[in-house]
Image 1 (tube, rainbow, N blue to C red):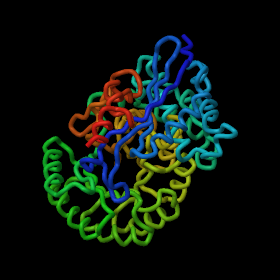
Image 2 (cartoon, one colour; image 1 turned 60 degrees about the horizontal axis):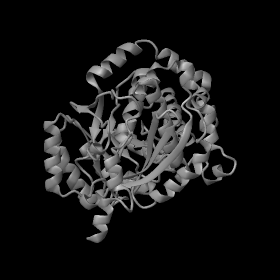
Image 3 (spheres, rainbow, N blue to C red; image 1 turned 60 degrees about the vertical axis):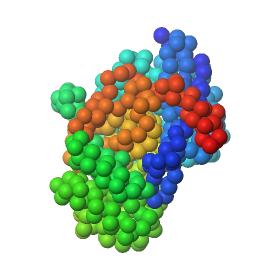
Image 4 (cartoon, one colour; image 1 turned 30 degrees about the horizontal axis):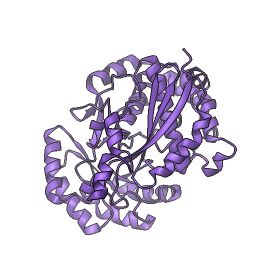
Length: 437
């Protein structure tokens, strides 16, 4: 069956997480976890589901961008798309007029991710496989055919990428079986959002330790003395043997970042995440160099626009941990390029997953990375936040602080229709009730 796409719809779905300070950090003090939620319909009844993550206000702008891209998708057959996925990716990102809005960055790229996520979900469903398994079962040349290598061949050629994938075929089956049995290691961000009171923070840390968590991330950047106090509190709770990371969400200038993080070095953080502007590659390089003697790495990527910026971060030794995002980059296609570049530069990938649907999505990519690219778990872990999973038809499964590989066909980002209707903005019941308070 060709699975011709006959319609693409998009809805503005928002969750009022700001009411309880979930997701709060030094730059985003009152986020409402939200999504531009895409559904693709085909002539045979099969559907594909995709989303891109937002923080509330402005989601309507992403919805408009998705609608602008719909004309490039409706009427295409799934078979036609996947037989030249590189070409289809370039069709969406290189429209001669709309590319001016990016190119490959900002709102138009978020919209592209939502659309492509839905297409990948449709393909996985058509094959009856979870997305990670669809990728793992592809031969290396098939994987390569999905990637647009334009602008990155000075760092990674198509031939080099193919060689990486071919070499990783060895023991691939063993690693797949390992993941199915043990899962992929995760860390939690849910214990220490910036505006949580100490009592809540302590209770969440206590509960997480009892549940087997050993890796914790703390939001910092608003007030140095408060950061010192909170980091001391958390380090005392989790003990010296567990892993601590800190995240400033782009709060500082370069010199300020170096000074601030040096003041937190006594708590032995593995990394400082997003210390400065996400666009400042050379600034990140300076911070990386200054913090290296303290044993603190730099992690970034959740707001890195595209594969070209990741290329430069890697070339400049500006990060020690690559944080891919399933909705900031152009879906699976562009993330595959970054996974392969990270492997060539021998920088571990530790994905971003703080937000609605991001855990559901990114687990597929990190499983593929281990099984078919990196073949290593050294210094690698995937972020987890314990929020909003109940709104998905195939929510993530965490066991002993590890992501267990999804079993359902697709990309795991289909929402319950009842949840979508209740949280659709502004006409959903949840938002009507809040408006009337």
